[in-house]
Length: 98
Length: 440
Image (cartoon, rainbow over all chains, first blue to last red; front, top):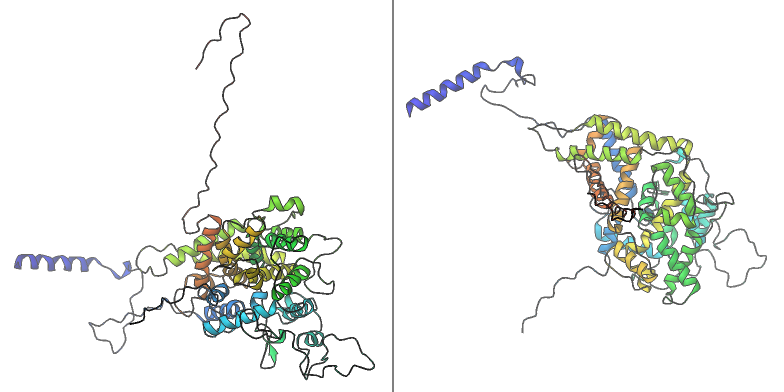
C-alpha cells in the first residue's frame, strides 16, 4: 500500500512540474487581497449581458409586448382562447359517498 | 392586426386575459363595417413606427365619432357626422343616452364591448398605446392553410344556396363584415385599400408581394393562378429561404450548446449575425420609404380576421357545426362542409405564423445584426430569454410545417423516386421471315 501511495504522489509532482503558465489558455486569475492561499472563488459571468445587449433585450421585450403580451413561447393568443373554449376536459367527477 | 386589437398589450393573468380576449373578439365580429373601418384607421394612426410609412389615416375626430358615438364628450353623438337636420325628432338620442348597439348577451355570455373599449385601442392614461401588427410572413403562413379559399367558398355557398344552416344573428353580422371588408373592394379613402382598376385582383396582388418579400409562392399557387393570375417580380428576395434556414441552423447550434461550458462549442455568433444582417437587408431593400407597408397591413389584417374566426368556437363556427378544440380542426371541419380540404400541415402553419412574425420583426429591428445581439437568440437565462424562447418555437414549427429540419446539421433533400425505364420495344420482324435474334 505504502509503495503505491508513494508512486502516486511522485506522478502528481511530475505532472505539476510540466505545466507552464504560458501554456494556459486564460490568464491567471487575480487573487483577492483577503483570499487565503488555499481558497478559490469561481465567478461565472457567462449569463450577464452587456449594456448594449440589455438595450436590445429591452427593445425586444417591448416588441413582444406589442404583439403577444410579452410572453412568447408560453401564452400564445390561440392558446389563451382555447383555454376559454368549451372543449377542455373537465375535472373528473368524484364519486359521492353513499 | 385584429389579433393584437383584441389582446391587451401588458400581460395580466392568463384567466383574465383569456376572458377579455373572447369578449373582445365576440364584440369585434358584431361591429358594423364602418366601425371596423374606423378601428383599422385608428390602429394605423397609432402605429409605433409612424415615420417609416407616411400615409395619413382618417382624422381622429372622425374615427372617434364613429367609435364612441354615445360618449357625452364626443364630437358627434349621432354615429355618423355630416348631416344636420333642422328639426330633429323628439326621440333623437341625447349625448350619452343612445340606444345600445347590441343589447343581447354575447355568444360567449359576456356583455357587448363598444369599439372604443377594445384592449388594442383603449385609452390608457389619456392616450392610445402604440399599436403594432404582424409581419407579412404571418399572412403568408396563414393563407397557406387555405383558410382564405375555404371562407370564400363558405360565403359563396351561403350567398347562392341553402346547403348550409341559416346563420344566427351574431354570425350574420360576422358574414356581412367578412364579405364586404375582407372579400370586397375597400373604400378608396381607407388606408388598407390596395385594389384599383389597375390592380384588380387583390388575391393575385398578394401573391406578387409574397414573391417580392420572400421569393416564394403559396403551396397551392398552381391552383390559385388559374383564377387569379399574378405577376412574379423580376427583382425579389429569392435567397430568403436559404438564408433563413442557414440562420435557423446556426441559432439552433447556439441553443443546443447554451449550457456547454466544457467541450468544443460550435456556436458561431458571427455566422448568426451575418445571416441576420442579410435577412435585414433583404427586407429593408423592399421597404425603402415605407414601400409595401400598406400591402402588408392589408394582407395581415385580412388573414388575422379569418384566423380569429377559427381561434375559438366563434358564432360562424358554431352555426356550421365545426366546433373543435383547435384552429386547424375547426378549419378542417369548415372545409369539409363545402367539399374542400385544408392544408395537411395546417396545425404547424398556425403555430408557426405568429412566432415567425415576431422573429422577422426582431430581425428587421436590427437586433441581431452584430454578434453581441445575435447571442440573445441562444441566451436561456430568464428574463433575457424571450428571443430564445421564440426562436426555439420557430425552429420546431418550421421543421414540422416544411419538412426541412433546421435541427439537422445538414439538410439532405429527398430525391424523387426514379421512374422505371420504359420497356424495350420489340425488335422488328426481319424481312427474311426468320425469327428475331434474342439479345440481352
